[in-house]
Image 1 (tube, one colour):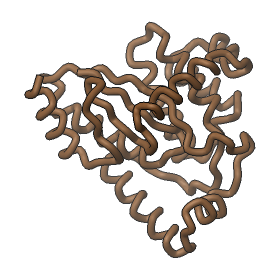
Image 2: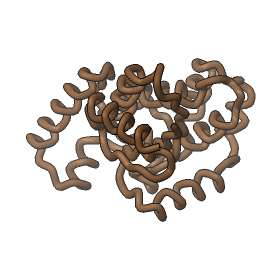
Image 3: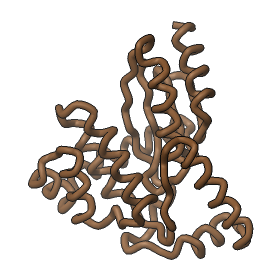
Image 4: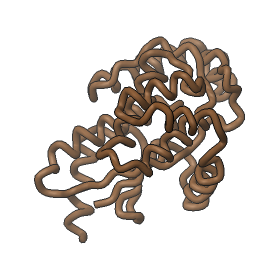
Length: 212
C-alpha cells in the first residue's frame, strides 16, 4: 500500500495526523505493508523567512478572537498529547520552502526511513521547540540528527537545488484537488483528510486493503 502524505511543516494538524497515522500503522504492520511518501504543500507560500508573530497572523488570516485562538490551541495540544506529540508555545510562524527542498532531497537518499524521520524532526523543531526551519543551520542540524550527510545537506539548503521539483510537486497536488492539509492519498485514489483519530485511519486502511 502506498500512502502519499501531502503536508506542511507549518501545519500543526499535520503533526497530529502523522502521529495518528503511525499509531494505526502499528496495528496493521503484520498484515498490510505500507510505503510512505511525503509531498510538499505550503500554507503560507509568501511568508517571510524571518517569520511573524503567530497570534497576529492567525487572527488576521482566520478572523479569530484571542479567546477562540486560545481554545483552538488548547484543543490542538490535547489532540497532540493523545497521539504522542507535544506542542510548544508556537509564538511564530515561518516560511517552509527550504524545509520542503530538504525533504525532497531526503526522499532521494538510500538510507531507510530517513525522509519520515526528517519529517518528524522538522515538525518537532517547528511546533515543539519553536525553531525557525527556514534557518539553514537549523535544517542542517536536523538533517545530521536523522543520519544524513552534513556536507550534502548544507549544499542543498545553501543553494536553490530542487526548487523546480518542489514547485512542480506542489502544483501537481493542487491540480489533483488538494487544497488543505494534511491529506493522505492511498494507492493514488483514496483520500483521507485531516488529523483523524488512529482508529479511523486503521479502519479506512483495512477497508481499502480489502478492496484490492
